[in-house]
Image (tube, rainbow, N blue to C red; front, side, top):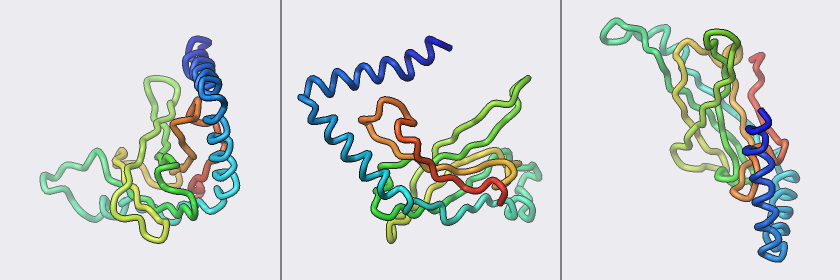
Length: 162
């Protein structure tokens, strides 16, 4: 556990500190400006639609009579002034793994055109999962200049009670 923390947090943070110093803190200024922009505008980020295709699976029999093991889900995210490439959109669910349940994170991929700062995303998940009781979708800010994936503690998520 200490080794994981060292590899995931300490070492990337030390590397970034070297990058800041080597570039006379120009990178640090840019990262601070970026973080300020994201913090000031994150309230615009909203998940405005989720389609988990559950009704399709219940009404459409598979051609071979077998139940599908995965399904494609989609989500629409409104970004406001934030660009979609500055965010990760992910599906979260839990699965039993011969003992305790473990969290599974599936990245969603953008598809289609960006229209009015709204982007559509898709991912494949196990077919038995239904939005709300079984999985949620989250959006979080990302940057190649972040030392770790949750450097900004901003998350927009679907309501798991839907």
